[in-house]
Amino acid sequence: MSERVILHSDCNGFYASVECLHNPKIRNKPVAVSGDAENRHGIILAKNELAKKYHVKTGEAIWQAKQKCPELVTVPPHFDLYKRFSRLCKEIYFDYTDRVESFGLDEAWLDVTGSSLLFGSGYEIAQKIRKRIKYELGITVSIGVSFNKIFAKLGSDYKKPDAVTVISRENFKDIVWELDCGDLLYVGSATKKRLRTLGIYTIGDIAKCPIEILRKHFGKHGDMLYAFANGCDVSPVAKLDLHEPVKSIGNSTTTPRDLVDFQDVKTVMCVLCDSVCRRMREQGFIAGTVSINVRDNTLQCFSRQRKLESATSVTDEILKAALKLFRDNYSFQKPLRSVGISVCDLLPESSPRQTDLFGNEKIRQRQESLDSALDRLKNRFGNYSIFPALLLQDKGLSHFNPKDEHTIHPVSFFR
Amino acid sequence: MKQYIGVTAKFDSDGNLLPLAVHWQDGRTFEIDRVLDVRFASSLKAGGAGLRYRCRIKNKERYIFFEENRWFVDARD
Image: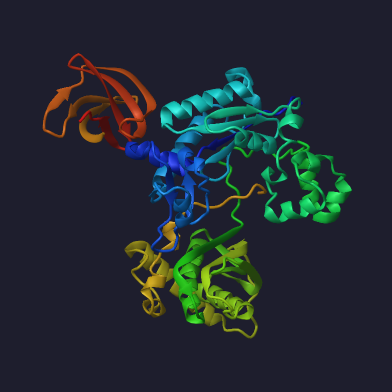
């Protein structure tokens, strides 16, 4: 079998680039796209090259960024625009291959192994794509070309913006192995710290470390790191329009003010749960497990999950389970900044269900028809047309619409 | 500067969209004598990206852009 040719294309400072394209006046200034500070979503989501020079970092608070760069221009995000540009990028990729796997809005892998007779080598295709995106969309990408997805991704990070880097079997030891181990996919701060204790600092160190040692310290994660570092990753690039089955549905939010008591949490959870359950019913699922995640005002966070007695999509049941889970695991040592609910172990709603011998199936049926009536009302007259009276107590906390406002979903490399 | 404009356009039987005349915001209308080139492109001056028509209007060449169901030009103010 001939060597695979994989491209990883990464739009440079995607949100900020799209904003700069649409607003020529800010183009020559340091620009960052940031959430709404009033609602405490004021973190940097993306920055342009000029802001990068001031060491403005994604994820830091606006005030921190402004300390480093007082003339920083912050603009609110326009997700519809980003989705449009993401789609336009993808259309360009599809001109060269049908094997395009998106990794978030701004990144994608392309398998162009079969396209070389038509369009030239991986490097040539990468250059064509880079030039076209710059000309047609007015934003820049950096592209890595390699024989596996991991190295291709490292290649796209290696030189930016507006560049192509080839990592081949000949040069990967010179390029990849010199990089900090934290650059490797799935080496986060915790893994990095543990690698440090083993005297491992670069990706080369991981590659040269005996696999047994990695396995001993990291379990099967160790095998994965070893394979990644040695260029043995064989995971395929998913095919065009191949929809992965949904594995979980969740919503979370950073609240406009800290949550200080159980009532606050209940209010916010109620809104989140309504969104999660409506999405679940829309897609025809019932869930067997509920999980919550909680972040306090010192940004410490944890998550807990619990199996339900029987799978359900009833909002009330999921909410009760989530609140119980919360009560059992948190007692307000610190006020909370953000909470989230998600459901997993999804089954089709038509799957057979064990009825509860001692529970009241009638109540459940009534709740199901209540939910479906509420769903229809909300679909016809909007999200705020009907809601529990509970939410009137603190409109500041409850007035948000996770179902329709958050439609960009996180993705994982392992699918 | 990005200026949205009115356009009279025609769909041919193949589904191609061809602009015939542009309507400036000040009320003037100009016929497009000929479309010289059509391609997807960005406009750094106006700030946008879409299908770009290079048109000859009164012996001058101008770009007009079709972006998400709206037409715009780069107005030299």
